[in-house]
Image (cartoon, rainbow, N blue to C red; front, side, top):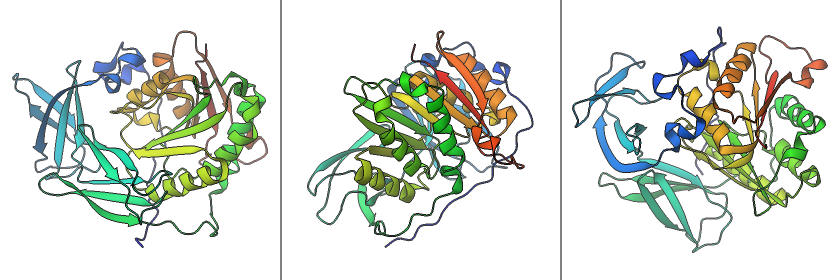
Length: 364
């Protein structure tokens, strides 16, 4: 069975607050619905190889057929020799993505012989017939060969559910306090499901998604306080699939314990739209990094016609987030920012996780 390792990364402490003036010029004055990731592709595409680079923080200039040059910031983890794909949108902007040669996914609840519809890239859809020895919540990896054909590479099996699931303390501390605060403030009453009675919950930039047990238990416990809600569906997105094993564990537990469907995918929130949701819960958006975060926050607000809840560590992040929300929220939306009640009885420390809670109510 393939072995997995947890992946961590360093996060810098912000030193300044960003405003609309820090947004890239292309996005200034645009409403959330007009952000590039919501504009359909027109079918035009091109590929090129990344040349030798002096360092990682570069902007490439790519000549276009019309004589103009497209400035392309190098995507994260992209290196010399990698292939980048340019996909044109209907508003003549370009989506820039690394060419995929590998695609991993968690098998949903299904039976052998069922055909799954997969989309490893923007321009390719695959039919995957589930083999007899592949079960729900296994992690399947496909690999593209030199000719572009996708082949089965491996299937990873999760450990038995009888093994303990060690989870970070913040899931039952700061995160639980966020959910309880939303309940005490009456926000659950404003959550309305879709026409099928499903409350769609978005968990963007979800990392490992360690909070799945806390969230799942909370949803089921308080379902009757959410008018019209019959069932729940959770959708998450993270830039890379480093945490796919953790996503599989979460999906298995949520389905078997509460019959909550959950799907988490690797994708770029600054490039790809997210499914419509009635409740979005975003933990630590790194908004003070600027750049793509204007697109990400705007897109999340556009995807949610209910509650958008964010939790930040630092005051500069909270203030930057409020500035971005002001740019993209619907006109009738109400915005509330308050300190996490968890810290009323606990020390802040140097890096207080989820200290500030920001709620955008767009259920109007």
